[in-house]
Length: 334
Image (cartoon, rainbow, N blue to C red; front, side, top):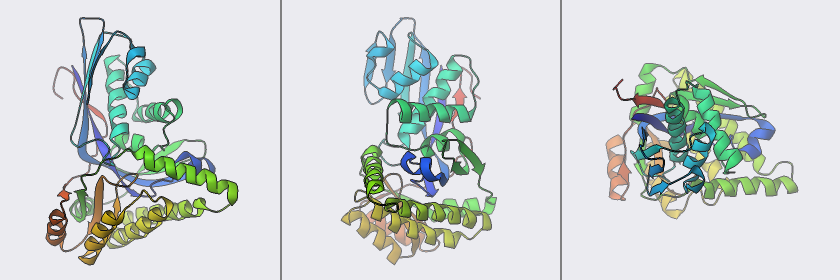
C-alpha cells in the first residue's frame, strides 16, 4: 500500500494571470501558498486483473478505457498502468470549495503512481504532467497555479513565461511573519460548493470576446491584478502585512469586475460586514461564487469570527504546508 498526502492551496495575489488566454500573451505572476488541509490517495495491488476505484463513487472495471473518472483514467494512461490496481481517495475538505482540490487530487495520484511504478520524479514533472492532463488533454479552462502549489508546497512566487515555463521561487518571509499570517488570515466556509470551470470558463470567454473588440478590455484588469500580486509579494518579504491586507481588498474589487459569478449579494454582505468590523481586505478563494471567504484581520479576530458564525459560516483555522505532495506511507511509516 502506498499513501500520498497532497496539500490544498490558497492564492495570495495575482490569481488568474496564469490563465492561458492571458499568460500566453503577457506571462503570469502569482503568489500562492499551500495549507495543512490535504487530499489523501491510497494505491495498492489487486490479485485480480481488474481495476477498483473508490472516490465519491466506486468503479470496478476490466480496463482503463472503461474508467469514468477522467483524471484517474488519464493518469493511468500516462504512467502506463493497465490492470491489477486499487485506488482510494479521501479529503479533509469537500470538492468544489475553491482550494484547488481537483489539481491536488491529480498531483497526489500521479505522485503515488510514479512511486508505484518504481520511478523517482521531480515535483516539477508532477506539476507539469498534471497541467498537461488538465489543460491539454481534458481541455479544462484552468491555469497552472493549483498544480504547482500542491506539488511544491510552501509560500511561492510563480512566474509563468509566455511559452508556459514556470519558475517557482519561495517567498522570502520571516518565521515571525509566517505565524502572523496564519493568525491574521481568517477563512470561513460559506457552505456553497461549485465547479471552478464555470467561473474560469466565463473569464476565458470574456477575454476572447473582448480581444476581438479592443486591444485593452479585460487585459487591463489582468495587468492590474498582476501588479497587485507583485506588490503583495513585496509586502510579504518586507514585513508590511497591513499593506498586504489592503492590497487584498483592491484585488477583490478588480476580480468582481471581471466575472459576475465571482460574487453575489450574500457574499457582498458578508464581505462588507467583515470590513466594517476590522478586516483590512479579503477575497473568495478560488474561482468565486462560493467556497471559502478569507479575510486579513489584525484586530477583532474574535468579533469577526462570532459575526461570521452568526451568519452561518464555518471558521477554519489553518497553518501553511511546506512539504507539498509527498509519500507518507509505503508499507512502512516514514
